[in-house]
Structures are given as structure tokens and as C-alpha cells.
Amino acid sequence: MKYMCSRAGEYTFSKMKLALTSLTLVFCGLLIVFSMGLSLAANEWITLALTFLPIFISAGILIALGVILIRAYHDEVKNKEVSFQKIIKLSWRQIAFASSFFLPVVAAYILMWIVLGIFFLLQEIPFIGTVSTVIFAFGPFLLLLGSLLLCAASVFFLFLLSPVLALKPFTGYSLVDLDLSRLSLNLFYRLVTFVVAALPVTFLSVILFLAARLTTILYVVSGSDLQMVFQWFFIMLPFAILLSPSVVFFFNMAAEAQVHLRK
Image (cartoon, rainbow, N blue to C red; front, side):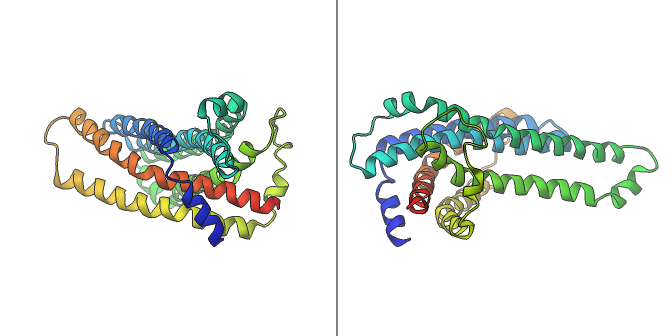
């Protein structure tokens, strides 16, 4: 494990990988900021969709990034020349399939969101709305819990699937071709390596989020909602750039875990 972490860290600070990761995170950040801006004038039910959907869409974008980074890492470790143009050209089918893998996740969330809308609708019914809100409170609780668990599972899928998609030759993938039964083997080891890989991302994300939150509280924009959205945008830019090394390390560790289990 120590050797895996050392090698993953050694190949983290590549200018091209950091630049590509930063651009991808900025794009995901734009999606999140745009959704946050729309949610300012939306009700609670719409706000939930605008909160979670950008996360799942971003996961689909990040797994495509993961395929590229892991292919580059594979070449770096073997002391081969890394050409991102060549990697993208040779891996575009893996990249497209990787992104489409999260479509069922988005569909699952939309289904939960629609069911949650039924509870919001019951809340608006005169006379019985208050009673139903109390009695059926377990419904929204379970649906929101499911949404949060789906977010956590999406991050784990990034770690689990990106090296499989990156390091396996493309032969017209299906869920059978991925041999998901093999991914369940050595699950404890995968969970341990996932925690190690995710620690830098998690720690840095919390610190950056707290800094961003304090900035928006102490450095308040007194103008319109549009000015507030622009403030979020300009905070997001350094947020994405500072987070990029930990994201590269995350995918490097995903590759290390997959190669170790193959051996």
C-alpha cells in the first residue's frame, strides 16, 4: 500500500494532467453554479433536482476523465511517451461508454425525485396536508437518504469502474463484458484503497467548501442574484484548480488497486 501511494503521488503533479483535470472540474463547476443560480427562484422540490442532478452528471464527466488519466498513468509508469491526443483518439469508445454508464444512475434519481414530488403534493392539500406531512415524514427521509447514498455510490463507481474501462480493450462493452461479479471479489481491499484514495479529495473539498462558505457570508454581495452567481463562479475557479491534484491522485490510486488485484 505504501509503494502504491508513493507511486500514485509521484505521478500526480504532471502539468498536462493537472491542466486537463482543472478544465474538467471547471466545466463541472459551471454546471453546478448554473444549477445553483436557477435554484434561487425555485421551490424546494425543484431545488432538490437542481442540487443532485449536476452531481450525477458531473460523475459521468469525471469517469470519462478518469479513463484518460488512467491511460496516461499507465504509459507514465511504463516510461512511455504520453500523448493525450493519441489517448483520446484511441479511447473515445471507452470514454463514451464510461459517460453513458451513469445514465441509469440519473434515471434512478429522477424516479426518486418524482416520488418525492408526490409527498410535496400531499403537503399542499388543504386540511390533511399538515397531518400527511407528519405521518408520512419517513417517505421523504428515505428518499433523501437514498439520494445521498446514490451520490456516495457514484464516487465509489468512479474508483471501481474507471480503471476497468481504461485498462481493458474495448470489444463492444456490455454489463456482462465488464464481468461485474469479479469486481465484487476482494471487496474489503477495494474499500480500503478507495478510502485511501478518497481521503485527500474529501479533506481538501471540506476545507475549500468551508473557505468558500465563509467568503460568501463575510464578503456579501448586496446586489442582484446574478451578481451572487458571478461571485460563486469566480470562487469556483480557484476551487477547481486547487482540487485537481487530489483528483489525479484518486484516479492514480484506482489504477494501482486494479493492477494489484490483477496480479
